Image (tube, rainbow, N blue to C red; front, side, top):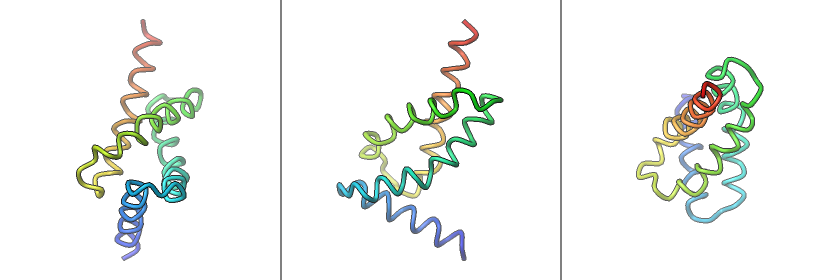
Length: 95
């Protein structure tokens, strides 16, 4: 049951953020930042740069919310943005 409540709360925050509720957007960011940071750290193999990649991802997530057709897809969608930012950093470092 807890997982369902968590998903519904997340969906509500996304919907409220889409409706222009700045506080809901801030709550959404605070809620997901630690998860995104942990994900970026795993992908990068270290903590250096992870916070920057999450920040870059959120600079895409916020304006991109309007394009999100199904709010329940937010977790997968936001993780994919974080992943792309990390892979871009890895590619840049290899070049």
